[in-house]
Length: 226
Image (cartoon, rainbow, N blue to C red; front, side):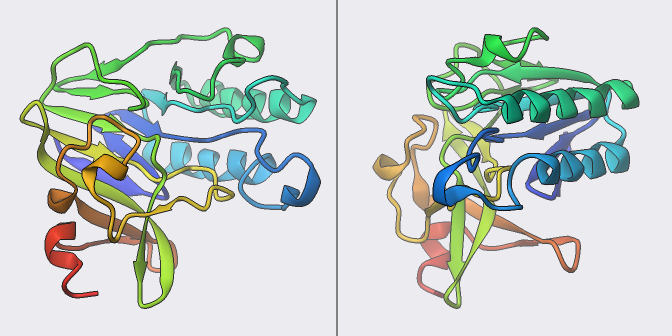
């Protein structure tokens, strides 16, 4: 199954996957910015859905950011994401993450611990999967790569990473998440138990200006070039 990388999302055949929306982050205090959440997130989501016309969209965990309260702006944003899918005819599914403790207060749609797309399982990645698959698509760690002093959100792709299967880790869909700098990280420093060999993870960076992906060597080799 071919993968298409686009705008912090991933396309698997007729399925669009995003991870770590963290809706609600930046709703108050010093984190009140015009990017990363709210209408800006919904518009980026709409662009992806209109461009790829998926049959279904899967949120790979941490749709929400809040652990204890859900501001009204969060309800509005989640309703906006739902409306985009409804208008396009796509089914929206959520695989809960560790931040989604209040999910049922804003979401009454399909919820799956892990969601199968052909030979791939989509899940948040904060816990070990129950099912077997040739590929696991996860989020959770918010990977970024630093190149020439600039940090960029990245996907991480590793063959034979977990139970002999490939793991693809998505960057955070929420631009307010600074992410973790993976340049020098070992497997034990990742929060996801699906990362077992950091050196074999190959970064893939989406270039928003050129609207194309740039693939780099696995971290074990890439570190020597940085």
